[in-house]
Image (cartoon, rainbow, N blue to C red; front, side):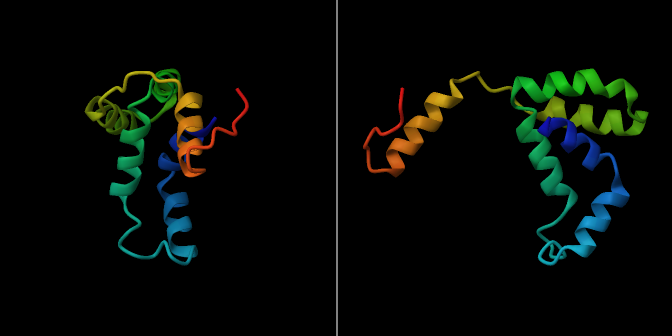
Length: 103
């Protein structure tokens, strides 16, 4: 679902501009198209967002499709990992190595 929201937000420049101008802290130079593209590139490094985009792309305006396709092509696909195991290991490390997560 998160990926679907990402595409809808990025596909509505007026909404993005409204969020940017009405939200304190987002009026700075840190808020830019570059941060949105960077986030999309990161998301496209995983298989799920690629699949979601493949299912949605034909209902998008051609210029937007080309824009997102270019971002996806520039993203390196990561090797699938066990995200729960990665999370558990990071949580254990934050807790000082005490394995308190039920397995």
